[in-house]
Image 1 (cartoon, rainbow, N blue to C red):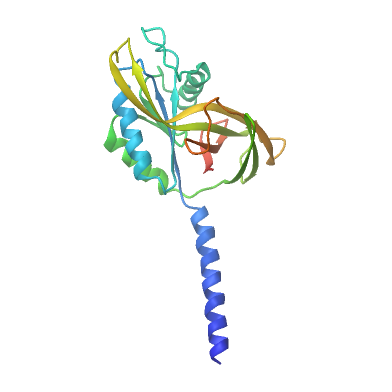
Image 2: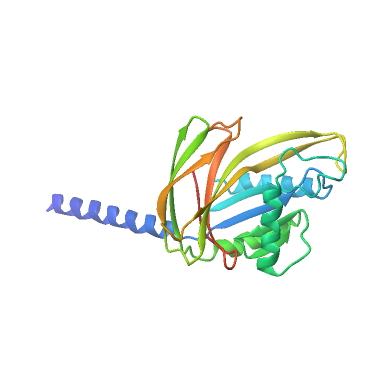
Length: 243
């Protein structure tokens, strides 16, 4: 009789564990996309705030991507992390949300709502709201490095039509000595810097392998890969995964 009780207890424990794991995967998430620039004097407080949030929510379903836009580059200082593709992405969001003109520092949460990146209370309320909504799309990623590229095996479940998988190569931290422009003579700290963003069309296949180009200074300790699924009709982020 004792053996039967022990066996039943172990079976219950394993079943409960499985249910808990499944429910954990369904929990809400918050993907914060910061649009920033070394040439913008209003941006350093936002960069610092996102750095604190990143550290605070490190083990939770909160993910941060910092895109350095290029439209400040003509104001006396060229941001070493700036990329015209990131400016285009911000303009795309302006169309999705019907909000123009674009600005820095702007934070967009889950592709739906924007915030001034330095306004901490509003941003934290936005994170809380996003985390309260259940996950609708499943995403699994496996990464293998091959010389100067990564092979990313992906599997997506529950996507809408016209969805895309975006894979970001993210540098966790960096400092920059700014010599000119609005932040002249300041050493700026940056966090979760997007160095490369690659898009994968999911209309043909929800499962496959993507080859991702890596920056020259890439290493597994100082970088991470964040993948997310986006509805290209509305801009909404449907699911996210970090590896």
